[in-house]
Length: 210
Image 1 (cartoon, rainbow, N blue to C red):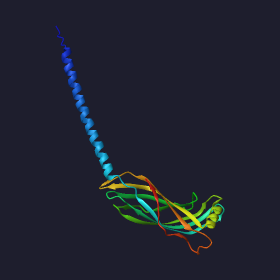
Image 2 (image 1 turned 180 degrees about the vertical axis):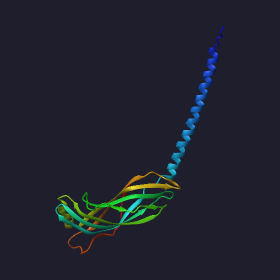
Image 3 (image 1 turned 135 degrees about the horizontal axis):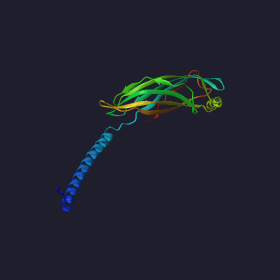
Image 4 (image 1 turned 30 degrees about the vertical axis):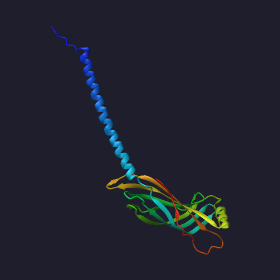
């Protein structure tokens, strides 16, 4: 004769209570662990949250800005930029930087690559580039815009820098982030300007976004 074993309702209730208590303890442990990890990450973020690098345009010289015909432009521009890392605990790798000049929303030089470099804590670097354009297409209104600026005596030139950077904290290096820099300078421009390049030697702060 086979024997049938049954558990009383009271016994089942005690076992269910034991299982519920075990899961609650496990859930509490996991929640505490995750909260500790998130708190640690947030603390590191507050301590090491990098400040964006600072750029300023120190000098710009336009040596050539000639129309071959109403739609094609030859240009030659020399620029000097100052780059500064304001962070005290974070270094910056500049992996790719492309710079070009624009006028009235039109690109007037080809993209020029700057050599990659590393910038330590609170370091500054001088960056120079020769920007050249040969037979670049421009809008039919380009000559009119230049003539109008010559009449008013001022020419506004924009310098754009696009690239990718990485943050470095100790031995840890971040993934690459896109960086965009925009510099604007105003040059004296008119019939009374002496022969030679149009120049701007007054430093101007650049806007930076990462």
